[in-house]
Image (cartoon, rainbow, N blue to C red; front, side, top):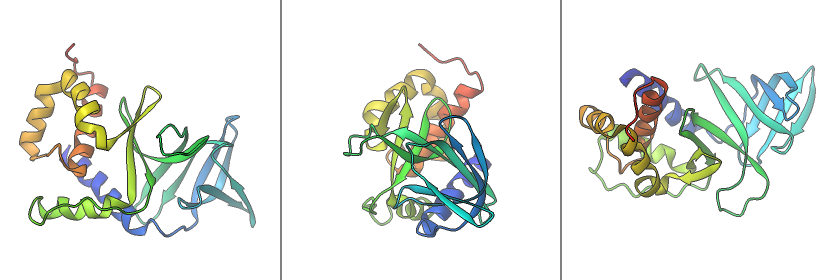
Length: 208
């Protein structure tokens, strides 16, 4: 578990650093019809359009045409996945928008690029690695997409934690104690959502 979280957080930090770069990567685009094209993919989150290139020909596709797309990031040696989801985030967007899938499972964590607003982390309030991570992640808005709803992570304590603790309270509290995870920080919320999904996928009996 510690290894998985370390890899996850390293990926998120690196992606936060290079988010402004839109290079070409080997990947695929999946249409609403289930048809799939394989080739080179480029995505700039600021424009919200995916470019697809094959044999020198470039095409552009918006979220109304695609189910998803993915590419292999050679710098991270990892596959990055995006899905076109209804823009029910309450931010004025209409139709569908591409969201990066950060964690998949019963609580699917997605994110979308947004103006960097920072987290106002006081000096010394977090371990050095978490404080740096919070800074790197500040260019994105995070949501949990579950049951067709988008729950912003700003509502973690009010909307998400009661559900998570109701199912796996003792396990999550032990996880927090063992790994010194805080529910108040973004890195801590990511770790807890991941652990909740791990417990769910492992078939641990949830408490009613």
